[in-house]
Amino acid sequence: MDSPSPHPAVLPAPGSPDAPGSPGSEKLPVSRRYAWTVFALAFALMLTDFVDRQIIVATFPLLKEEWGLSDTRLGALVSVVSVTVALGALPFALVADRWSRAKSIAVMGTVWSLAAMACAMVGNYAQLLAARAAIGLGEAGYGPAGGALMAGLFPQRLRATVVGALQAAGPLGVVLGVFLGGLMVPSLGWRTTLAVFAAPGLLLALLFLKVREGREVREGRTPVAGPAAAAAPADAAPIRTRGALAELFRSRTAVASYLGGAMQLVVLSTLYAWLPSYLTRTHDHTSAEAGAVSAAAVVASAVGTVVLGYAADRAGAARARRKLTLPAGLALLALVLLTSAFAWAPAGPVQLVLIVAGAFTVTAAVGPVPAVVMDVVDPELRATALGMVTLIQNLFGLAVGPLLTGWLSDTLGIAAALALMPLFCAGAAAALWTASRSYERELRTDADGATPQAAAL
Image (cartoon, rainbow, N blue to C red; front, side, top):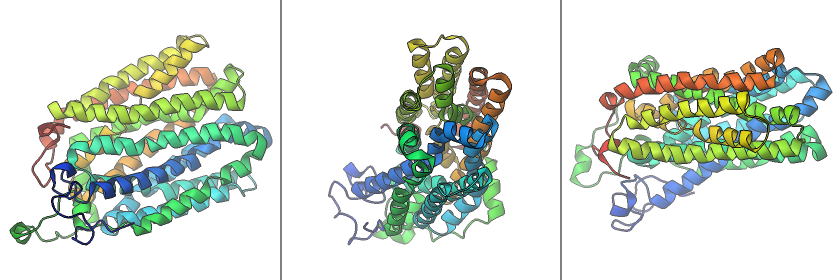
């Protein structure tokens, strides 16, 4: 892959449609073609990330039978990945900000792919839990580094859209993991099923060694040439770790966004982990049938991530705070849809429609939250800020959903557990609305002085 550094030998000629600063380039610091090529590579790698993370769900029935596992222990196999992602996210994000985001992605992808292969060779539950934890450790730095890299390649007014589109690879990876896992487990067994997707992730990770970053990409600004270059500020001294942490919690908008995004993900991770088991236990579906129905819900969540991220950008173009009030309102709608589906709707088409609609709306904050956080922190700390987003959303969101639902299922039954978990959407709505009250005041501008509400898509 060619270098994205802003030099004439690499970038298109001035005045060409793809040239930085040309009317068609939307002020990208690299060519539009290069930006979207790197995005496609990042999307494909995140897709394999979530396949490796989620395919374990398709093996739950076999693991439960073979090793006699409770729902709580099965849920822990999902939650442990989120816990180790949370623990590693911030330190690995700090490394990415100080070293190289692209090289950090290459290292992280290699680690989690090797750990995914190890999951197929374990001999007992403790070893499988440890291998799953290693997957999370490898994935910890990918989201922050990938999101920060995208923020540097695309203009501020498109960040919620682009980050939301990148995050949509997660639900699509879940679809592949659940659906293909449901097809493969009965014929290939759980070990081969877990091993099959490790190699693609390793190859994609190594390709990131070809991606190069210039300072313009790291800061998300256009290249400066001629007399203006002499006036450009010299490289600032790196922010110390203590100062970086203070910056991440200085903003009321960022703190409330961290919490709102995490509570939404409690509900989303519950659907991803337990919907197939719910369908096989209460609807007498086969593993393949449950995987297909669950895949429909996950596809809806992937579409919601992109569509609602775009809608938030559009709403924020008129007034910045609407980038947060829109997902806050949709969180309340998700609460109504999912509670109705699991508490009151009879089994059948109506219930499935409610589940799919709830899965679509519950993703409304996935794109806006990291985009908003990047808007209110120092540009040099974007990967670190996304590391904090990843830490909080994994530790208090993705880790909580599968484990808490498993415990509630052991105690009250799986139907009652799924009916109670959407209550976290109410907390998410309150947190996102709180964040919207300070967002406009704390909003930073890009180097060209444009703010999201000042530029139309």
